[in-house]
Length: 302
Image 1 (spheres, rainbow, N blue to C red):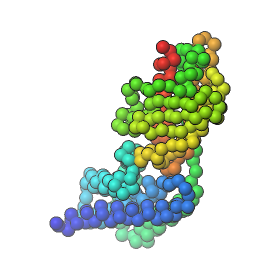
Image 2: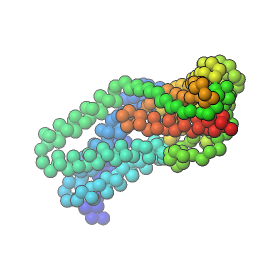
Image 3: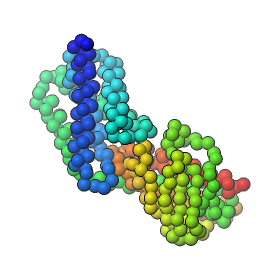
């Protein structure tokens, strides 16, 4: 094995061991909370530092831009593989996170090459110190983010006919359209209920057998069905990073034999930065809504 290959491998190995160490520190600093939280720094600062470590070991190899990008991709592949094996992350979760890690690791590689070419040790130390400071401060800060997603469809049936299908419905047989559902993310399949009254238990069953336990807190027949989520599975894909807090279906009589059905969901995220992950959370929640609501529409219009 020649010295060039050794330097390339050092970049891969040391950057990933460094990342594992920092993630361990982050988890220790955040360990006082009950629910595991994945903070901004783990997906932004750590990949930047990983890229800079790679750049340090590769700085004298005269790598063209394409080679840097290729090696950065390999480093990300190793990082995601370690996350799958040692952190228990699901494949779909890693698909979601990979663009974010790729972007910031690539940034770290190219910034590192620029910095280390200048041979300005004070500047290099200052940049790394700032990144470490942001990492520690972020890991020690409180993180709380909640949001609500709302979707509406029109059903060509009166509220009285729609209502019974909103409260509970038989197994959904339609093929999944949403691409994440198609590659393996659990999708809603059926809802059961213990009774048609306030306080009744309700279950939303997903395609892989996971069940969300619910309690009806508002039962205003043909108008408002609101339920709190009292039990939810801890799936390695997405449900370990989000809590669904409450769901709601609102029915509006349009006066012409049709009903406007609105689905609302409230959730809490445990992954940051929210400017990235909330895009995914909204998309997934919206497609859960639409799969259920389109099924309700179909069976109500029969």
